[in-house]
Length: 224
Ligand SMILES: Cc1cc2nc3c(=O)[nH]c(=O)nc-3n(C[C@H](O)[C@H](O)[C@H](O)COP(=O)(O)O)c2cc1C
Image (cartoon, rainbow, N blue to C red; front, side, top):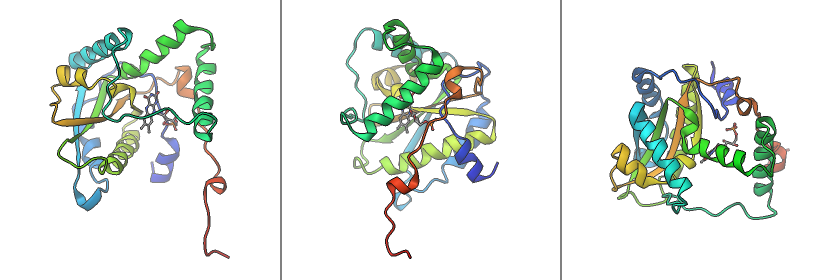
């Protein structure tokens, strides 16, 4: 698969087969991904790769926190997209696409809650990669670098027939990852990537997200 094909083929996968991903393959993917650029080659990232009982314990504790109404405590605090903005419109559009295929009506609170839990369970993936950064690194400087390596992981995974879903939901409760995955409090836990063999029969895995045409978001300067 060439690079352009990989960029075009990557999509968020939100259900996986239970088959484990061999550690050797995950190691190879990370080994490729660390070729990502980083500011002054600082390589501010660190990985914690979860599978088996540890991942199951994390899933359960995440769901427990979610359902008990525990306040979300992500390292990266963010507001929702501004109401009425194009960003909010795009968010609503992808949610509608997913809910339509999943046959989840707007008023079905129960089904919506079950859907929400899916992200906190790493979409049932057999493995999850958690990316963290030392707290001593001045913040938010490393966010660009984390974005670059995250994309590299998702693209490299395709070569091995693996799918991924980047997820904020998976790092909503850092204390869960501190406790069950042993990630020390000296790290900022930035993002999770669910990874595994995609279940292409799952309706949400058929969603093709849309993109704004380049002409709408680009200003050309100095061209004929
Ligand atoms: C920083 C970041 C956080 C994300 N968090 C979630 C998440 O918590 N749950 C989820 O279902 N998808 C999450 N996604 C996936 C996006 O919804 C997805 O990339 C977007 O809708 C475009 O779809 P595509 O990845 O299939 O092209 C996240 C993506 C990024 C880049």
